[in-house]
Image (cartoon, rainbow, N blue to C red; front, side, top):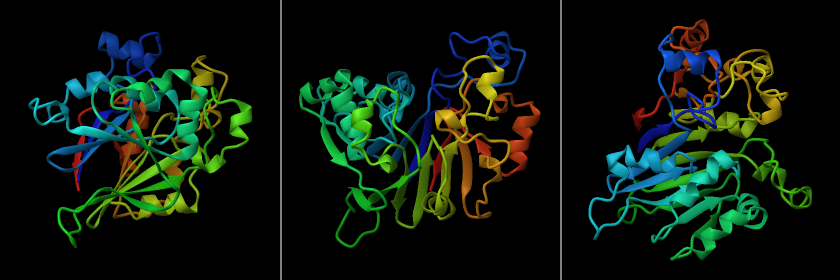
Length: 310
């Protein structure tokens, strides 16, 4: 299984076009050591001919064009992307779907509540049902392993399988209160555990909180890409960019009490990597104390183009 990071930043990318924070200003004028990043996007391949997208970022078109393996090789073969798995209905996770709607079959996996949020509450996404051919929606049931790609032969173990893991989040603000009341709250934000042969990969770019099930999914995986959005809970308040805390926005901060870096992950097996990093997060500065603290704690920091082979 190949796992490729197409984008590693939170919404708005890095630098963010309308932000003059020390990180964004420093990257523009060259005064800090940092890499530009597009918005969080991951692609997974179980074999050389197929790729599965985890979410669909607003930067998806740019990310596909920058990745030769995702491009059309010939008119007879078609594109290697045909399947997308969604972790939530958040705009930054779904806007790229509109880039993919043209003249090819698409299959989208999500919880039933996320599908309804997109198709019933946001009229823009109804265009997916009017595309030619129309999008085929598939339901992700929680904590149940389903096949995404069949094995190459009967009895072979090289197929790709997926399990949706609830992450205790909430639905986006654009979803009406009346519809939210009819949605199971555990379907709002999920992590995705992908399994091929004896290898497991867990993806959770937004982590409001880790319960027993999700903690176990991290610990049993060989690779986990997890929420690295904010360093501190009041980061955006201190930057005068918002009145909301990290937790208000559905993200565990990296530092402080009950933070991501203090969760009791099992050491040894799992390679832990931070993704979905906000432009204000000091870990983006590769010479900062916060960047060093993350690395010394045994974590890696995702960047665009990063790749793993499991």
